[in-house]
Length: 324
Image 1 (tube, rainbow, N blue to C red):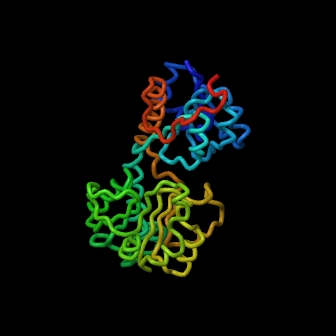
Image 2: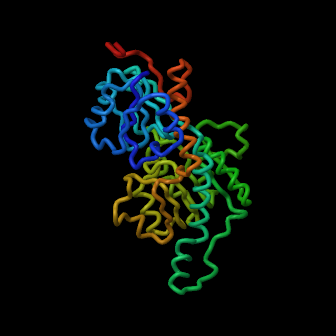
Image 3: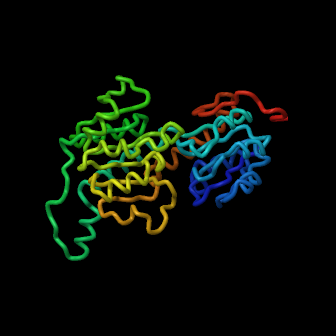
């Protein structure tokens, strides 16, 4: 059997799973329940591996990592995002990269709905007030009849569109790969920003989407609009969002992702009463966890069987000396 390493299960989600217990009945695994912390430590952990199953998006697989791990053939990612992996370098060094698309779509879409409702209905503030003996009424926003603008119609965006429609919202969308068969009204981005009462981001982080929603785009949004981000923090220009919230050019925001994670103590976002914050947990439910971990392992077996699945990068030209 090839040498399999899990270099970064911290805090542990793989180790307690049924998927991992089943894997251990089939093959030994080199397992680490701490983060590598440094590039050199990551290289030490996977230097002799043929297969790495990466759990945490904070673990960065750079050109140097791939170049320093000459036996590595497969990097199986738990999760959808690939912004922590130098995909072109992986391909150049003969490493196939896979991910687990769609397994968290229901969980993330439900979380986006929860954030949207929490901001619109002011639930954290109202809850705090009741606990303090206050009994304040009439400051919530009804979403039925309002417009939900979805940016990105992947698995999560499509599911959130269904949830928005289910509570009576008009749903419009902009996506990089428009297809009328998606069943959502597609509009230009500027129109979406101007018309939407809620704007929700569902894009992958890449060179094309970093800073995608910056000051010019934020300035087009209604002052009564709410922004929801369960995708990746750097898709939004954080400084521009803070400026808009401080100037009340936006009604509020529900954020699960940030430029720096964990969110630093005293961050400006923590000072706004109209912002609801969660710790990058939208896709983490027992059901989504188990499905994703199972798929990350299935991707390993399919690769070894000669039929790789969920490939996001594939070997293009083996590096000299690669694989012996």
